[in-house]
Length: 143
Length: 152
Image (cartoon, rainbow over all chains, first blue to last red; front, side, top):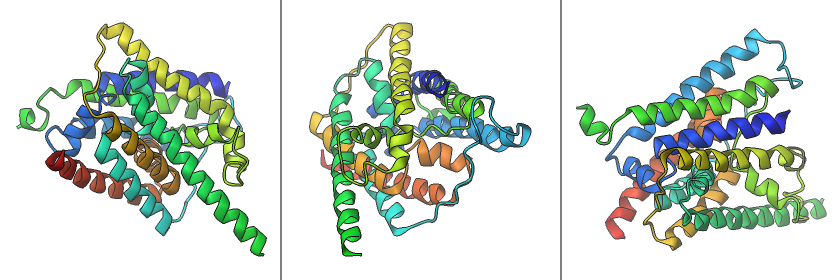
């Protein structure tokens, strides 16, 4: 069931991004260059719906119909790593106008050069995962 | 005033945003799962990379459904293509997309989320780290986009 709901959710998610034009990096960059504030309406619209659902549904239902519990507030701490990561993410987003969801949906719209961006995301996550693995494994050997 | 803020109109942005919100709401309401997008990339590498970071339980447990979320996103774009009947191909240089994508991949994994994971889901779950991350990447991206427009 989770696979089906994820596909259905992704379908609406990707269609919505394409309707908004967020699958086109030019539109994202026009927002980041403060020429068109439309992307704030996209994030704002999505946020209002998610906020109502994330805060309301777990109070109304004890548990989801096809799951054990609702993912809730994790309370992840604000770390130096999370801030440096956000800076690196912002550099990439501002340089290319791409983020993960908009890039995947863009492929479906036929915006084929975005495949270069997807390739970059695969390479970036490979590089980061390899560095983190090396650090973790050398730390556990040192113990 | 509104024409200055939204020179190509505002309605399609609002409709698109609400659809994105519904797309996030459906799996949450039915299964309780939050659909962050960027984790897909590391989860896909977990099939072939033996490193300890890739083999974290978090990636191994969720990697099955992440393919479906990704397939759904691509299908959603394709549905729009069928509906609109026109293809918009970006004019942005391939190397900008490649380099930008690399930074996006590294940054999202390091900070624990992307525009959807932190900027929508994390904020909706009232996570403090998501507020800090969203404000940070938004401010940096606005600066970098201005700089890039000046140079390139």
